[in-house]
Length: 264
Image (tube, rainbow, N blue to C red):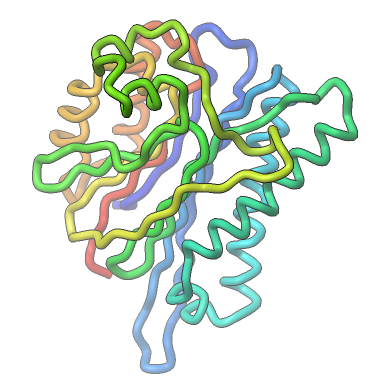
């Protein structure tokens, strides 16, 4: 069974899907005959109106995918995979940000468009994670489920300073206001981190169309029960996550990238 899958859905309210998500694995054989696998999970949530939001999110993901394939196909994949991938993410965020920003500057009807981004790069037992905005990454490990990104949002800043509780944050009227986005200004900086992965770890990337319209405990139970088994059907799990958000109102586009770490 595949150990990763990506799915996106327009939801129940929006006429267009301004999310864009992709995932892929790149495999190669080393000189000593060992196969290696590099996994990329990419997710963006566009904003600024239908055409503008769709362009922003797809442009961001295309820039990342092109940069990844350029390094993996045209160079030594192992050299790239063992390089400082935090620097790669930061440099590519700058490149992708400029592409969206310059398009917005040159196209009046697209002015103000932007996108979130969350990207996970996995090689051997190391996860390199980068994000801009409020699209999230979660990790399920040995029954413990936690968010491993910090939202770039107004509500998160209120939480960090203790001015509101998590319960108030979930109902806050400005919970969708983000403080950092791709393409909105000439420069933007991602938050990047690296952390080890262990066999059986489950990684979820998602747009706020999932987190805003589903119960976090229900998501945890679904992943615990359906995504930790090596024989899990990840397409079916992603479909159930989408159904969960749509059942909660589906007021936004919904995108998920799911990955379970295994021994390669």
